[in-house]
Length: 299
Image 1 (cartoon, rainbow, N blue to C red):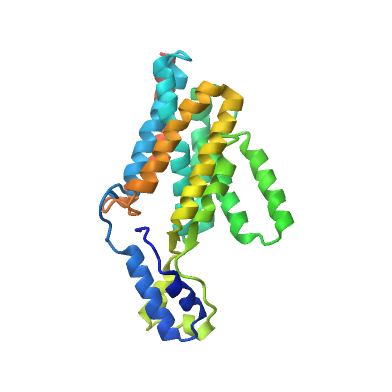
Image 2 (cartoon, rainbow, N blue to C red):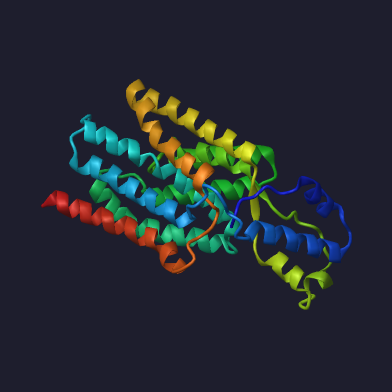
């Protein structure tokens, strides 16, 4: 998808119109405008390209932890690059949450690969906390609570429980707050309009079929920048308190670079070929590279 500016006048007119034909036409217009390949200028990076950069950054981060002496220049450099991965993966988790037609299937896939990755992660890290796929699964739960739990008190309780659970996984203090900071930038591009059952069953209306086909969204640029700045500020505070001022101020540079890639260079599209390969590559690469690094270290 391409993130573009949506005409807010049309947005609200759409939500108020009673005409099915007008609704369908405007939905079609918004969807085509949103999905169209009208990316120009600097936005040349696909979602998959940024994910591969995140994979490289993650690998360097793990190499630093497993092989390098702490506090050396190369160690600090690799950790700095490694902070690119966390916010990028969380951002694309939110996108995936909007894209998916099956939230349960998404959660089951994360859980399956999290379980498969836990032994390699424990061997490589030498710890007994959950790997990053468990972190992403918890953050998916945060998104679900954000959008589906209407009781404010219950929602806060669930947030606290999920945050507490995330403390026993990778990216512990960071993941849940970062997702909550980034989530407000995402808005459905086509508001949900109440329709009668016969309208949904009208299979001849291709516009109505396309409307029910997927959840589309647009990015509010102001909210996006505000959320990213909150993430950076929160990361600096937590890192300075847990690692010291120097480490906190240097390691945040990777996060800033990740947000720059998304805000300035991301065109909102997937790679045009081998999409299934790109989709599952990370899930497979994650446990395999941990096993390889652990094996090399043990030799």
